[in-house]
Length: 354
Image 1 (cartoon, rainbow, N blue to C red):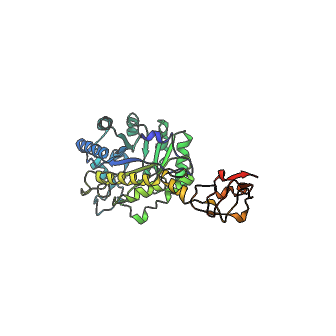
Image 2 (tube, rainbow, N blue to C red):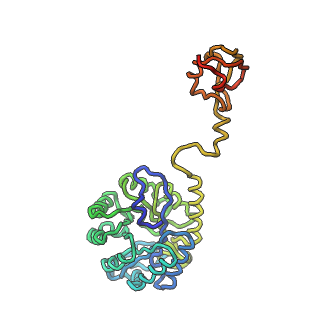
Image 3 (cartoon, helix red, strand yellow):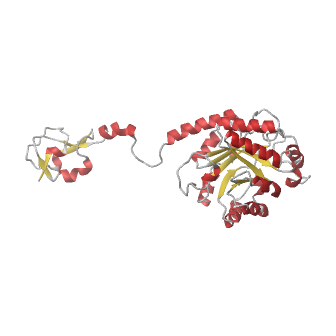
């Protein structure tokens, strides 16, 4: 399923749970190597992701040289944002064109989050949908520029209050761009007690016409956090993705790998098998119970042929192979067509109209 199609079939309001689009967030875990980037694409596809997403920036346009770190310095000791971004800003237009073409070959959707106007311009030719980082929630000129390119927008909501999200949503919707919102906690890694997945419900309540998803920064573990997000209604799930979780660096240690992704897909398969159909109806496997555990009208005592059926003549017992108790008033308008022994299950053929 392509991400763009989500905007054409987005659940509205109190909608059923849907199988989500899964985005493997490779970010800059390619370490500046096209070979590693392609390995990430291969492994995301093998793991079962619908899309793989990178990040496109230049250190000099994303952060000042005095920007402090906001991540776990025990895992990523670089204490300055500019210095960290400088290590990873090796890819630009030519590299992303090559990665887009490779994604097409592998049959996985390509995405990359732009962090400046130039990258937004050339990525516009490579993607059907724009993903905007939580960090640009209040960047009105940038969001409006992206909207003017005419594509749907997925906006992460990390570190944002509801009034800020509503304001940014108005900027997007005023341009008539379809909008999806991702619940996100902008903390690396996010402790489980801070994940606050119930915010998904809050976003669904406040933005009933937008697809709502989840961008996860918790440690992968058993991947149940993502499964819970789906149960709460997330129609997009995004998580950082790596080929080796033991590698040093900002986005490897809290990322999932292909085995985690396979585990999540298996969990989803089981979940949706358990969920079944959201429309209430009896299941084929319940047919024996419908027949044998429900009740029928039964003769409480001997009833002679021609005798008017009275309330004192009947009770209701299992199985449900005869006249249903819901039709008792109609049955009482009849006489016995033949002698009925005690405990006989009433059939309409046993009765004649009075």
